[in-house]
Image (cartoon, rainbow, N blue to C red; front, side):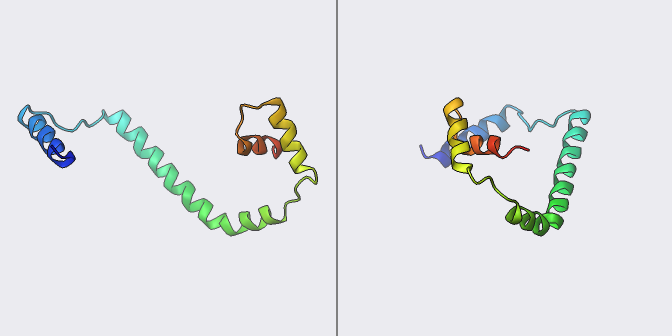
Length: 92
């Protein structure tokens, strides 16, 4: 049986037994709808600022001993991936 045949078989059995899509309660729908709207608005706001953010990041002075600081964090927290450790190094 191919994957498509299996899916068709399962969908047919679900339909035959009256199974339908679950739609959450109104409170859950409203909460998620608002979260989606927040994400869309945040994305639009960031898009308007992207060029300014990119320029600011490019001119921000990095520590001269960045490599050593990263090595020090990784020595203290070897379980961290290097990019997470670098985020620690760059925290204000």
